[in-house]
Amino acid sequence: MNVLFLVSDDLRPQLGMYNGPSAPSSVHPPMHTPALDALSQKSLLPKRAYVQQAICSPSRTSLLTGRRPDTTHVYDLHTYFRDIGSNFTTITQYFKMHGYRTIGIGKIFHHGEASGNDDPISWTDPYFVGKQPKEYMQDRISWKAIPQSEWSTKPLQDTQVADYAIQTLREIAAKGKSGEQPFFLAVGMKKPHLPFVFPDTYLQYYPEDSIKLPSNPYAPKDMPTIAWSKYGELRSFTDIAALHATGAINTTLPNNTVLELRRAYYSAVSYIDYELGRVIAELDSLGLANNTIISFWGDHGWQLGEHG
Image (cartoon, rainbow, N blue to C red; front, side, top):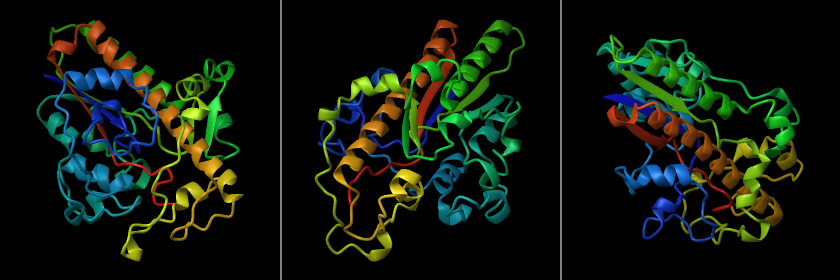
């Protein structure tokens, strides 16, 4: 069997497939995620699955090595498990050792020093990351809806990732079955990670009057202080920094800011659903779906005004 290993960054489990007792919140409009909804209907869907640690690199390292953070010794965004923990075999490296062609696209490991630049030993092919056009990033604001006149000529990073994945699948299919080794294709979307940058067409799914504030903006009773996050990443963006928020316990951002961020986040989720859907559809159209296992996972959740 081949493996299509799909990943999303900072995705809270606020999708339609979790409606019912497992739904995390009741104060949101329905997420528009037709591709993931369709995948879930024919998949094993764990509704009580938890990350090992609520930050990218420790969580991804844990999942990809099959070891807890207390074993990998990765607790931040800088430490490489092979330097501090041990020379653990990753899941992609394991498949590579057993004859698979392993291809990494987008964000699978945490980029940079935290993974020795995407853990080269795990892959048979050169790694492809893609790059967000600088025009979408230069003002460093927390969210941005990119007009079609721009994104149609300068594709966003996750569109580049999906395009490369589709190109790779077509190249694999063109070789046919004669002598072609099985593949492990890992495709990682960067969104809905901050900043929430997405094509403006996705705002249509979330009218402004459909977005609600969370009902629990305060710290839990008897919460230990160490459990509180001051959301330093969000406060580093220029539009949020201008609000002079401290991130202190039981302080919140202005209501209109919370509503804007929630709407932008939802739109970014719908955007990556579309890109993942393109990859899944291509797998099917090329006749590769029947002998390919598809998995989809997120590295950790995300707060959008809950608990401050």
